[in-house]
Each structure stands twice: as C-alpha cells, then as structure tokens.
Length: 269
Image 1 (cartoon, rainbow, N blue to C red):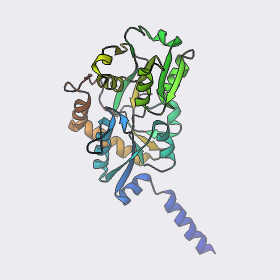
Image 2 (cartoon, rainbow, N blue to C red):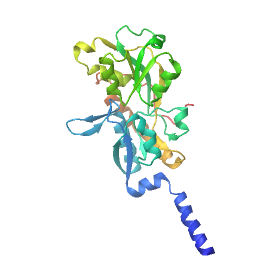
Image 3 (cartoon, rainbow, N blue to C red):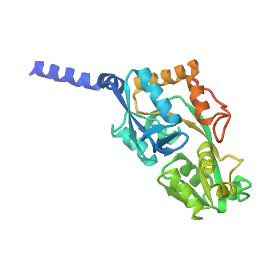
Image 4 (cartoon, helix red, strand yellow):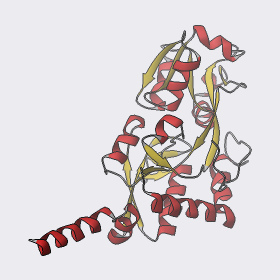
C-alpha cells in the first residue's frame, strides 16, 4: 500500500506541474481566442474566409515564437474570459483591455497596444464628455468600456450589444445617440459608412479612458506569460510590432493614428 501511495503521489505531482506552456509545446499548437468583427484589430475576410487584423498578426507572431501552430477560435466579447477559464482556448488575443477586475480572474501579458475610448455620434452632439450624462449610449456587453460608462456616467442610458457592428447599426437606426468603443475601431466603422452618412458623423476629440490591450492567459501560468512577454518584446525589438501597427494604423490606412507607445517590460499599475 505504501508503494501504491508513493506511486499515486508521484503521478499527482506530475499532473500538478504540467503547465499550459508544456501542454502547448507537447501538442504543437496553441488555441487562441480571437474576434472576427472588430476591425482593424480583427475581421473576417469575406472573400478568402480568413481572419486578418492587428490582433491576428500578433497572435501569429506569438505562436511562431512559441514554435507551434496557431488555431483560431472565434469568441464574442463576453466569452473571452469564460473560454479561457474553461480551457476552450490557451490564449485570448481579442481587443482585451487589462483591468484590475480582470486581473483577479486571469493573467495578462505586457501591453501590445494602447488606445482610448471615444464616441462616434452625429456631428456637434457631444462637445465634451459631460454631455454623455443625458445620452443614450451603446457599448459592447461585459466590456471594460461598458463598466467604465456605468461608473463614470451613471445617468446615461446604456444599451449593451454583442459586438461593435451591432452598436453602429443601432446608432444609424437612431436607437442610441452615441457608440462608445476604441477610437481606431470607431474611425474604421465611420470610414466604411456611405459617403452621404459618413460626413454626418464624427469621432469625439475628447477621450473617455485610456486602455492597454494585453494577451489573456490563465491564472498562475507564469511560464506561459513569460514566454508570451518574451515573444512580444522580441517583436518590438526586431521592428515587427511597428510594421504591424503601420499596416493597420499607419499613414497608408483610411484613418491613420500615431504610435505613441512601445512594447516594454514595464508594467503600468
């Protein structure tokens, strides 16, 4: 019995020390939760039926440096963390903002994008952020943006949607006064509106919050987090990260923005 007990403890110890990184390397692939309708971070190319975007290229770069094949699983905003915790995906690279609340549930990599929440609305409707207090606003369900709006603009009437295209549809149908999301995403949606409608809308000059996007990793998986951080830092060092940014946000894009950040080992609190 003593020998059986020792054998059982040995097996359990082996299971306890099997990390996500070990499992990913063993199977030769990493399952990554991504979105398919949040351009320019991620979108489904209707012609080729392949995923493209800023997040997608970073996911591919991380997988390449881990030495494994990336397998993409499409997740909605409110499924990102549950899918990770349920082991349906190994990583989440899906426009995921690092927040104190989320850090209690999952690990985050270093930030690979810094953005701001802004408002897409009819021109002249919102001159300052205080104007939002009496407005009908739309945001993605369970997102950091919706939580920020509930906290900072409690008097506003908030409608939550499954994903960003639905928010824009609601805006055009006059069901809401303003769509709140990442500034680059809103600019991308505005640029794709019919020309006569496009000129009627604007993305606010003022920002509602600053957001740092990170890769979602299961709690206590420090080896995997370290490997992802190393991959991101290498992408920055080699210039790949900046090239990806230029492809999706640079001067050749419909709504260019300036890259005001670099991927750094410093973790802002």
